View: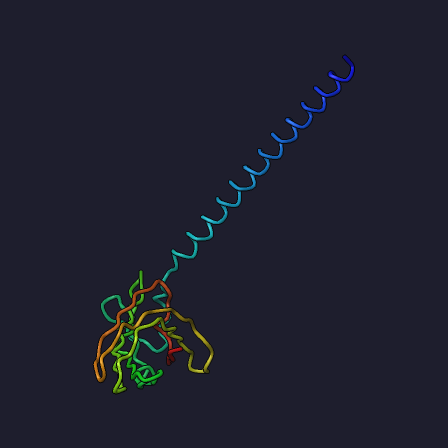
Length: 159
């Protein structure tokens, strides 16, 4: 009788311990999930600084990049890339590129990284985009919108 009473106590201790461990794990998971969602929301709601007028002109509540350096052709692999438009309103930045395949061969589309720089050459920000397949000498427009405030950039490169 004493053995069965001790076994019952041990079993009860094991069950209670398992329940406590499960509850603690659930609480940790819920806390982590709540903090991750809060961080994601902060990253999505970037504000465009409409008071920063470096390298832009303001027109109809829109920042339009006027840097001459931004208008220069950028060569990437066998592509010629020109910045056709870089502008922001209070909610988003619009980037319009003209891309031309300079090769005699088909360009197979892939992801690119557009890097923006300040006048002193420091990185200002970067975004990823995709250039689709291009026939030899074919030219296409690529449009990207982002909440990243890069309209004030001085120049750009493609990697």
